[in-house]
Each structure stands twice: as C-alpha cells, then as structure tokens.
Length: 86
Image (cartoon, rainbow, N blue to C red):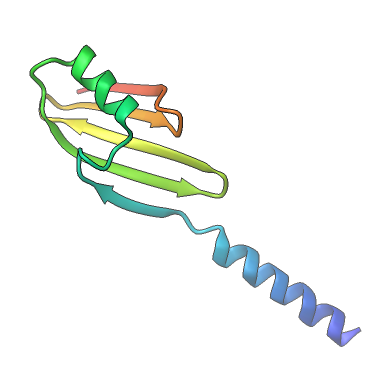
C-alpha cells in the first residue's frame, strides 16, 4: 500500500512539473509568417514592439504588441483569437 501512495505522489509531481507554462520572447523574424502577413496587411505602418510565444500543454499561442498599443493574440495556426485596443 505504501508503494501505491509513493507512485501516486510521483505521478502527481510529474504532472505538476510538466503543466508549467513555457514562454519565450521572439523577434519578428522568428514569428510564424502567417501572423506577420496578417499584421502587415491589417496594420500598415505599425511596428511590432514584441512577440511572445506561450506554450501550455497541447496549445501554443502568440501575443503580439504593436507600437500603436494594439495587442493581438493568435493561435498556433496564425488565426487571430483576440484583439485589444488600448
């Protein structure tokens, strides 16, 4: 029975350790080309301030902030999912 509890605790610790989100900052050259093309087409003249890639479990999303204070969020396929105008 003690081994069973130890196994359960180890599985729980492993699940907790792998559930952590992973974030990294990208340059505009590293972002997916579909996202870059969307920004160029829909926000001409705006410059990209930063791009952040966020990975969690089986999802990847990209957050992009433009110099005109527009924040965009895209899914892994480059489809916009959220737009914030400040």
